[in-house]
Length: 268
Image (tube, rainbow, N blue to C red; front, side, top):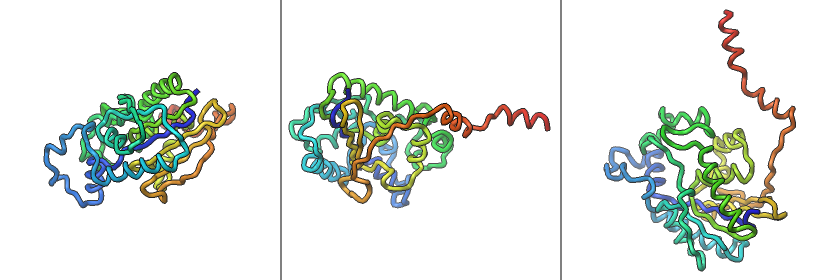
């Protein structure tokens, strides 16, 4: 049995988020960024002033408007931006447990400049296989799901039927969605490519999962406290799809047999 309520919160705008956004909209030039900034360790980025404000707004929303009387478990990623966000939420009587499994996705050998350039050769895995593909020496989304499973095991053992809040990262929250909603690869890729704001996980976005029948999470709502127009804000039932034999074969047919293609070319 999982927690009664599970509240996931993404960290506020980080210095890294600010720099990436600035480069993409051309308000910041890579050439103007000091070398020591480019070499900053990924786990050490702080929040910006906007990020701190976002965390405070999200905290007030959680305390005043989320229908959770109190949290029994408080978990946070060991990255600085997540810990700063968790503290600024100002949850009453919080006793945060720092959990390395909740760290951000490992982007491997991709540096800041390559990360910004979406068509760089090191980032093409996103277009080829966004779920199972991984950056050089980094983690795939499938890898992240394994970390999330370990976290869910802990929640199952220690917080069954209770209320838990977790402060972590956007990619981790996607992995929670994949596992808790039994989302398949095609569903994830469709949402990953979507440009609709409701399908994104913004800074200080909240995903609230709730049980009704005490066996698994039955409903989820996505809330962006800093700008409610960016999220649906409504409870949505979680539908876990199943497949008949025919359904599975229909899925299989979406992947053409490459051996047949090879044979047809060899006969030409």
